[in-house]
Image (tube, rainbow, N blue to C red; front, side, top):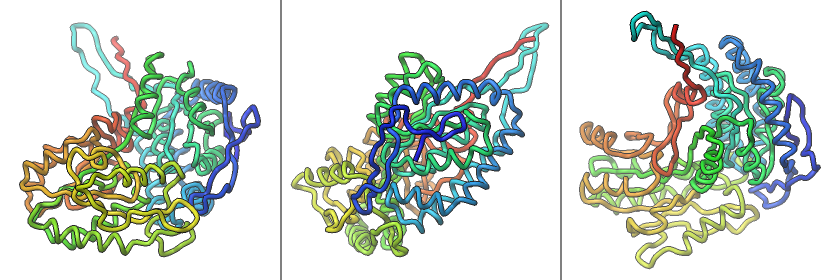
Length: 468
């Protein structure tokens, strides 16, 4: 695996590499460049040089390039599945059926959006002068992606940036660079050299990239801690920042639903990707009248789920991505207060790799660490509430604000919840589905800015007032 800079694959300038660990075995399965300042300098210089031309291309040119990239991803589907699952351990059949189609759809959406930028009509707002607006690209974008959905998050970043006329330097997570490196090679025949550059490395590589003088905008999907560090570093040079950070999604289940059917529907979502999803339903708030029935049914559904390696066609989810994340989940469970208890699961599986049982924790209180902090693993908590007012108060009583769902047959109650919940996404009687046409972003410690949708495209543009 190599970096991709100015249209060519190359190793780190120092020749240094990093070991990549297969989460399904715990063993080294390949190596990745450990890039340094010379590599980020070269990538940013290539992006800056390419920006001069790419920013002046027509939307039609950018659309054709993105449509070609979408087709190329489909054509190389098996190679992308191998690259992605080797680094993440997720089941290959789920990547192919659940993730790859959405990835391709996102690229095609932004291909169309490139030719549909909105803007105010020109007009006379003072006598004798005509005003109009130009919407222009920002410049060189530094983009940092996480390890839970490496290819999907790469596409969510580069597609709107390129569609708007920017050039990019993408730094994938240190444990999952393979699919991003492959994406750079696949796109090379569709983009001029320097429009998309991929630099692999560790946190120091990311710091070098964020601080680079050529970078105009920094976009990151990652933890709250990473978001704080990047926003602080970017502020020194007044760079624009786009943050999609963690989540701690509440699920409000009212007593007018079928408790067992709802439990079955939610179990299928809660443990997808081993719970390593910032929108995953993690805090279950259940009306006290159906709490016990729901808890029993949900725990039974969770216990049925199968965790397995990428080549296991029956696996519902794979391992955690790395040893540190597995340790984090285990330590959090080890610190449970005495009033909380594990209903099912709770342990690492006795096999190679970073596999963990689907886990349900009940009896928790609102100020417990496991309620207040993002778990990012196959663990959910269950609480009860007395009425609608308490449910909404509990739901909003955390620092994150990315996603939530409400389950009820009462239309008015559902609409009250969609107004009251302080999150960027609210689902009603469903959870987890995203579409390219709608924004994906949060509030509070979940960050600011939007991925997907026209809003995501506009985040990579700036407005200029022209007066004649």
